[in-house]
Image (cartoon, rainbow, N blue to C red; front, side, top):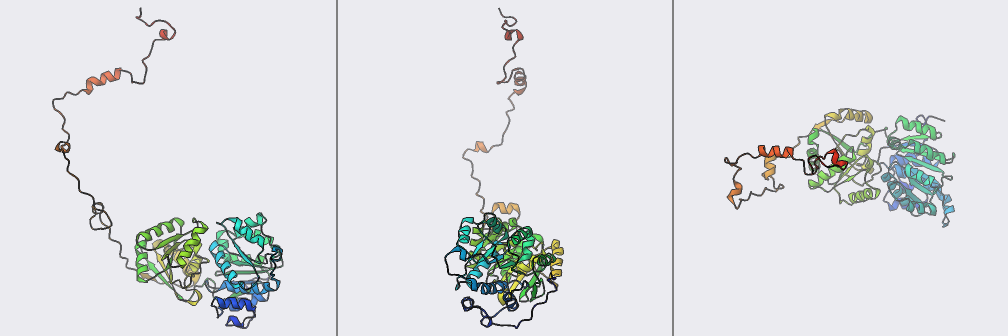
Length: 473
């Protein structure tokens, strides 16, 4: 097996437009319905390779059309096997696309469904966080293209609701992210279910040494297609770095949103708890903000994403679960409220903006403790991000006494004035009676000698044995 890093890309004639591709008219019609005319660089080089039947490693900047680069040629190869029969047996799973997150799987499935709309080919999507019953029903009807996350696909394999024995194409989309999440054992189990004679495609925006080892194990003489330097960021995305103190980050975020007039943006944080807290703070500041993280159910996440796409949400506060697979047209910018722990996540975060050739803005708010993370990012993308000074106008905070009395802030309700007592006797301080004799001395001895109310007096032993107490007659 050859090293995929040394496999040269096959020479192909550069094709600029979809209409010039050797694709079925039904596929070209679907592409035209979606308004696409010009091929992106990854599509120009990857589509001919996949049509030729070679295994491939595809590296491209995120947002450059990797989904169409593998979906269209796979559909073209499957069309001769397409059937209009209603029998599920005539629609076995022939192409398997694995994605690391639910959002990415849903996004890929939407594209597959759109490209195959004029053909008899069927598609389905299975991922966790949803009821398995509807997914099982769809699989039993028969599908040629299955988009899945590894965990839920294993659930269906164990339940024997899906058969992968006739798979001809397998796609590992965002494979590096699957390894980061810890899906390598699941991938190995899934690949063991597949026929050895198949075409394997691995697509990712970043190529780590682990990814290259994975490709060397499961890809046969792959063609490597790199349309951009690995781990490079899009040139049409302006990257800005602001150095701000940790305690002024929230104020800096509000100032950046206002100064750059970001009408819609994704704000990335590192923790689920931080996402929920920041979203609530932004709502109190008058912004339409919602949080999106792994603790939310899939239905909640899809509803939040749909509201964001409809411009009903201005600020989407998200963890890195949203850094992959979100395809939002003309997203003006993203903000890194927290510098990511993994430098490669920075590439994927800022890849949410500047998609399909549009311009974008990526802003990072960093404090002193983020120096090491910033150094890792600059080393990865092989460029320096010059820090800029941001004069943060911290919100004016009043002393506690002033806040309690409601002075200087209309949002704090003023304390009601104390009402004068009707009887002046109750307003007098306590004064002891000098004529009263202290009663505790003489009462204390009596209380000490007397047994407590719930304790019985001790009785003589003779009384317990039936005799008379001493002194009784």
